[in-house]
Amino acid sequence: MEAPPVTSMPVTGGAVNMMEYLLQGSVLDQALESLLHRLRGLSDNMDPETFTDHELVYLLKGQQGNPFILRARRSLSHPTSPWHLRYLGQPEVGDKSRHALVRNCVDVAASHSLPEFLNEMGFRMDHEFTANGHIFRKGVMKIVVSKLSRILVPGNTENTERLSLSYLVELSVLAPAGQDTVSEDMRSFAEQLKPLVHLEKIDPSKQRH
Amino acid sequence: FVSFRPSVLDNFALLSGQLNTINKLLKNEKTPSFRNQVIIPLLLSPDRDEDLAKLTEQRVPVFSHEIVPDYLRTKPDPEVEEQEKQLSVEAARIGPEVAQKQIQTLNKLCSNLLEKLNNPRDDRDSESAAIRQSKPSFNPADTNALVGAVAFGKGLSKCRPPGPVAPGHPGQGPMMSGGPTLQQVTIGGGSGQQAGMGGPVGPQQQGQPGKIPSSIKTNIKSASGSMHPYNR
Image (cartoon, rainbow over all chains, first blue to last red; front, side, top):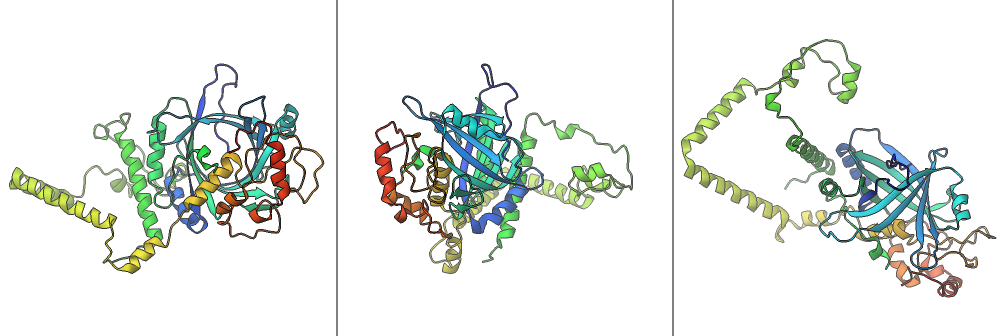
């Protein structure tokens, strides 16, 4: 299960504002082995870690404006682990020279009653998918190579269908707001994965069309 | 023209990556100057040291007198040191102008080589050019499709709100007054991404742009009265 560091302070006033720095790319199935080989060499020495997760995206519609989005994730390979709930803010605009996508990020762990709880609060599930693949770490950087599949029958995670013939590759760092060296380090790591994968800052709102 | 197997290139890339990391660590201002540090072995033993083996990823299982000359070395071999001294003498002998000219020649050679590597000429062996182009390792359209899926569910089935669900026909249920949805089901526009999927797409909905029945179009129309910031 993805386990980014949860802030040790309670999420009430005064908590550290964590930002997620993100670079994304993809790799075709046939090049996956080369990429994993390269990542194993570049990352910190750890046993290769695989994961299978199920993510559900919930929306809460307000009176007006954009709906509030929460992402709930659970591990299918470790079913007893807690659920993981994440809020991601809008990408920070402004500094075009910054190399990574930066957005506010709040992570909490939750019990297995999370879906019912969200429903009771008025959230509705918009879509869900399963992700399985590999995780690597280098220092604070996390690299996730995942195969995404759509769930054909809601709630049935056995019956899935791949979304694409490529794996999604994401390089991310969770850091307190204001640390600008992070994106430099990410960029130099991304350089080392070329030309296998081009990791770049992709603005999600541009992908709507 | 030598063709390199991908694994060889990979290993080169790994080497380059690790050298980068080492360089960065050495340049870090918090790194003490190694010239001022002295390392003295306190204990040599022919026995295997498990902690050390684990720390060095099995590269140094035993800290014995055999490994000391290599791992704790501070100077090159005498022959190498001699060669280096000769080179320094030679360099001092030739004088600054000659040296400068040699530097310029070297720089020119390097930039010529770089240019040749970066811009393959057409009269080069067409086969090697074809090999280079026919093995892309990623597809930008796939990247966009995957990012869209993760960011707002593009290409993923919209979910109906909880209620009477007919199992096996998730595409046909009526869209009740439940929440807003993030995506528009674009019949024509979606086919661009989904053409990339070669996998076995069963006779089920949501994966087949052409098969989505018009009921979904109708459903979206009925919901469009409410606030849909993500609509186009």
